[in-house]
Structures are given as structure tokens and as C-alpha cells.
Amino acid sequence: MALQTPVVATDAGGTGELVIDRIHGLIVPVGSESSLVDAISRALSDRPATVMRARAARARVETELSFANRMARVDAICQELFDGRTARFLPRKKTADAT
Image (cartoon, rainbow, N blue to C red):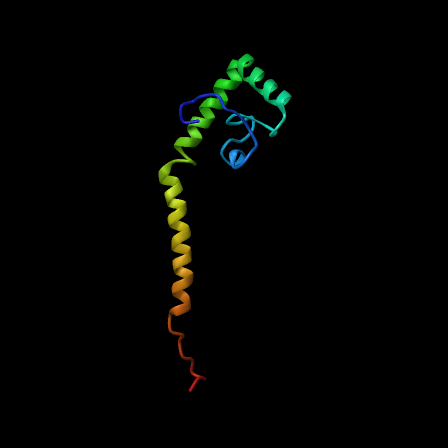
């Protein structure tokens, strides 16, 4: 994706989270040889669509999947966890009713 290379892959593992079918590449079902052959043929024969998907994949790597964005999401999760944990250990305010 980062090298603007056309992507044809199976939907195994987390591929579908990285490559959105027909946007960033072509995704085929695992074990479907005919689907794989068809997707490779489409990627080779429809150059304008293939170039468009490769460019979209590169743009996604530079934005959504960039190291900075991924670390910002991890930081936000850590901060959320920290805030929740800290709140549990803060002393509770006494009310006028409590003696």
C-alpha cells in the first residue's frame, strides 16, 4: 500500500481492516482460486481503476494508518484508561448530610 503497488489479497486475518475492497485494492474470499484469478485479471486489465486504488491505498497509509495517527489512538486509549483508574482512587467529597 505504501509503495502504491496494486493490492489483490484474501480476506484472511485483518486484511479487510487495512484494505477496503474496491477502494484500496481487491479482496477475495480465502480459498477461492477463481476469485483470485479474476481479481488479478481485473487489476491487470483495468489500469485506470488499479492506479486509482493504489493511490487511495497510499493516501490511507499516509493519513489514517500513519504512525502518528496510530500512536495518537493508543495515547487516547491509555489516557482514557488512566482517567478512569484515577477517578476510582480520588477521595469522595463529603456532603452536608454526611457526619
